[in-house]
Image (cartoon, rainbow, N blue to C red):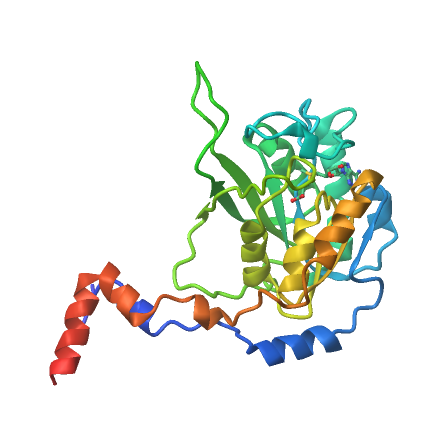
Length: 304
Ligand SMILES: C[S@@+](CC[C@H](N)C(=O)[O-])C[C@H]1O[C@@H](n2cnc3c(N)ncnc32)[C@H](O)[C@@H]1O
């Protein structure tokens, strides 16, 4: 076996790491403004996404983010997180009939509207995971990663473990062509992100944190790209896309969400959260703090 020539220093590869692609804010803004998509963009359509997707052009979207209804008897008004249900919007639409059939019906529409370079991040609780996996296979989508989103709390239980994770399945249309911007040296498939809860704000009870969606957007799309969400809910995908110089398009069947969605989108500006990816990386000082061996290398360099 070939011998390693230089001594291995844990963490050293991170010092020289650069994201595959990166854009200064002016470049990202230009790409966003000049993007030319062959149909509707920056719209939420209040209709059934299955019919909606059938009317979209082929090879249209760069990224799909989908957080489908749960398929359990969940009204969106549950007191899961000690919420005041006054602030939870009525009309959350769950699935009527068999969850597997519903899942196969909407996922079947994805490959046609996805570009060859596109990915789809599908959210699922563990109870519906099997249906999503089966539907992905039937739709000829390729499973690239099974991400676990871990949040720090869950509903109190007496005779079983507390669920404090969600599944995010990363599917692609073409495993050779899909776009993946490696913006971190060692991106793990377990994401630890808190559920954020803004008291006193009206919304439907299933809102995802923007940070989770933005992570998917950052790794799997470029500024100016079109991000599609068939189940908009509170519009988290639309807000994350808009604030990071991406265009969005989506469906929501619950018309009573219209005003909340409009307010959420009007309260943010194009690109307001956009930062070049290099600025997310740990500094030399942070790396030295984490890896004592790096500290020694840096100190010896200073001494020379
Ligand atoms: C889990 S929630 C999405 C929450 C969203 N990710 C957020 O952060 O706010 C699912 C949403 O899908 C909507 N929905 C259910 N069936 C639908 C359908 N056939 N077409 C479009 N929207 C649908 C529900 O009304 C609900 O708002």
